[in-house]
Length: 186
Image: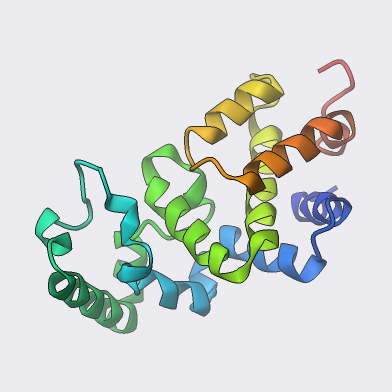
């Protein structure tokens, strides 16, 4: 069964409407095609809390966050870059297929979750479920389910939606592993 069908099947079983699942799957797998999301990315004020307490402000500088005016100036620059050089805009903010899953690109996970939080809790649950299922498909042969949850937990912030998705996957672990092509002995 193709991965997107697996995502849709399990999201539906979790009670997430298919239009939400499809939207989130598209955002994660093809973020450059989601103009609403790219517009959100250009609004640094909406996700600049990512940098609170971090030593590195990459791809920005500490002074970009000192005042509201400097933050608004950076936002104006991001908007211009989004319009004038979309490829560089995406490169600067690590926007790409599954980029929110990588530990080195946790900025993208933060921005996607901030964006989806504005849409509602079902979108956030679908985001976590997508990543859990992708991660299981990729590494279930090497890690236990709990080890996978631990690794995913290190890449995002704890929240109720993640706990709900983890609980759901735990309760359906055998069936999910079968859908992803693993035998029952795993």
